[in-house]
Image (cartoon, rainbow, N blue to C red; front, side, top):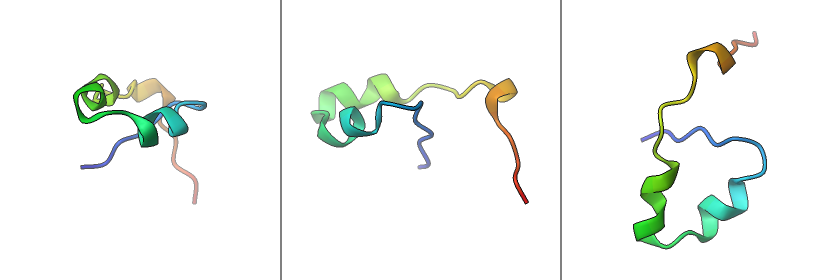
Length: 37
């Protein structure tokens, strides 16, 4: 599963306990997605 993290939450994701991981599993807002080619 791919998880897109907001800026500043990478370390929180890496150090989260398994029961805290679900808090990161949110749908990413479509208007914030971009494509770079």
